[in-house]
Amino acid sequence: MVWPAGEAAFVTGAASGIGLGIARALVGAGAKVALADVDEARLSEVAEELRTAGGTVTAVPLDVSDEAGWTAAADTAEAALGPISILCNVAGVNGGGTIEDTPFKVWRWVQGVNIDGMFLGVHTFVPRMKARGTRAHILNTASISGLVAMPHVGAYTASKFASVGFTKVLRQELGDTDIDVSLLVPGTVATRINYTAGEAEARLLDREPNREVIEANHAVLAKGADPDAVGQQVVEALQERAPVIVTHREWGELHRRECAEIGAAFDAFDGRHGPDTTARMLLDGATPVSA
Ligand code: NAI
Image 1 (cartoon, rainbow, N blue to C red):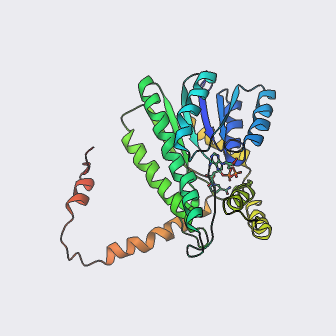
Image 2: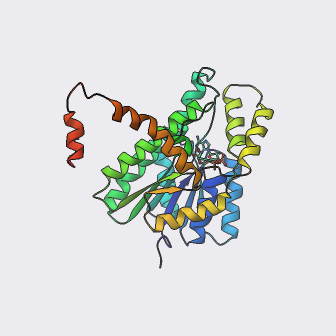
Image 3: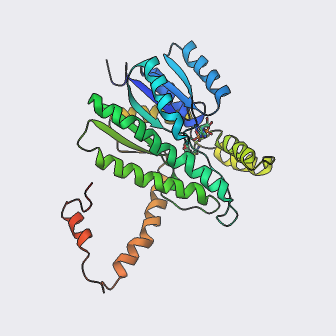
C-alpha cells in the first residue's frame, strides 16, 4: 500500500473549501478521514458524500478554538478510525477591516480560530503520535497573508504570520521524530470563506452580514484555484514530505519584495552595538534557547 492508504487523518475545516478538498483527496488516496468542523449541517452532508463515494469517514463537530473540545474530538475520531497519523489544521476565518476599525471581539475570534486552533490541534495529537512512534504528518494552513502584508485584513494577517512562525518552530522541534510538518501557503482559492467567515462575524457582532462587501470579496476569490485541485496537490506534497506547499508562483516575487525592506535595514545598519552572540550561535548551528 502506498502512504497514506490505510492511515487515519483528522482534517479541520473539512466541511468546505480547502479542508474538504484535502479530505476528498485523502479518501481518494485510501486514507480514513475524521472530518472536523464547527458547521454541523455541512459536515453531515460532506460525510454522506464521502461515504457514498466509498470512503471511510466520521464527522466530528468541533470548534477548533475551544480547548475543552479537542480531547473528546480526538478520542471520538480514534475510536471510529484508529490512531490518527495525519493532522491537517485547515479551519480558518477572516474578519474585521482596517486595524483601527476591527473590534477586539473580532480580533480575538480570528486569532482563536486561526492560531489557537492550530496550537490546540498540535497539543492534542503530537503526544499521541509520539507515543506510537510511527510515521506521522502535521499540515498547518497559513496563507499568503502570512508572508505578504495586505491592508484591510490586519487580524487575519497577524494570525497567519503567527502560523508561519509556529509551523517553522514545530518542524525544528520535531526534527528528530518521525513526525513530518508541512506549511500550506495558499494563494487565491475559490472557496466559500467570505460567506462562512462574513456570516460568522455578523453573528458574533449580533448584526446583519454586509452582503455587498461579502459579494465583492467573493468575486475576487471565485477566480482562484479549484479547492479540490489544491487538495490533490496537498496529498501529493504530504507523500513527498514537502516542508512548504504553495499554490501560485506570482506570490514568490511579492514575498521577496516584502523581505527586501527588512534585509535592506540590516545591510544599511552601522553595527554600533557590536556582535550579537545569539545570532552568532545560530549562524554556528547551535540552538540558543534550551527547553
Ligand atoms: P471555507 O470557509 O470554505 O472553509 C473553512 C471551514 O472552516 C468552514 O467549513 C468553516 O465552517 C470552518 N471553520 C470556521 N471556523 C471554525 C472553527 N472555529 N472550528 C472549526 N471549523 C471552523 O474557507 P477556505 O478558503 O477553505 O479556508 C481554509 C483555510 O485556508 C483557512 O485557514 C484560510 O485562512 C486558508 N486560506 C484560504 C485562502 C483562499 O483563497 N480561500 C487563501 C489562503 C489561505
